[in-house]
Amino acid sequence: MRNIGRRLLFADFILSILIVSLLFCGKISGAGSAKRETAERAAQGRTAEAKDEVPTGTAATGSETFSETSEAKKIALTFDDGPDGAYTPLLLDGLRERGVHATFFLLGKQIELYPEIVEEMFADGHEIGIHSYEHVDLESLSEAAACEQIQKTGDRICELTGEWPSFVRPPYGN
Image (cartoon, rainbow, N blue to C red; front, side, top):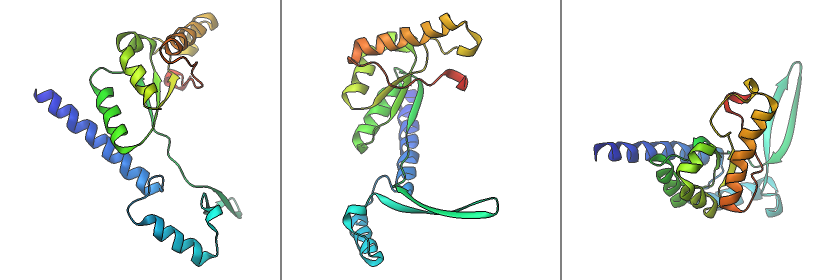
């Protein structure tokens, strides 16, 4: 029972950090911020159509300085090595409560243990990617063995979701 309390506290702590990060970067607007943004745009002579463009400021590259305009800043939340039977359901609950989506890079071995969690991720609208079958360094394998790690995991994800994953994140970045 004590471990469950710690897990809940840990999951809530991690989600709180993520939400604060999202608020800081402007991905999630706080109460009253829509009015403030409208007033700021009006003061700058910007129209509502340009609401997704924000100045990114200036950046120095050597001796030159440049300024650019781009889309609003965003954060991509990604999680590797799952699904985990204890932590992933807590994480999914917290993301759902906050209306936040993430990308989960899954291990085939873990998918075999927790297929219902993968189905829940997909139903909640999260992106699901491949992280290999056994969390091995793909670079250390033969080409055929590395492809098998990816293919086997992708096949299992596709069986559960009906979609082949769009992304692969190799373990150790290799």
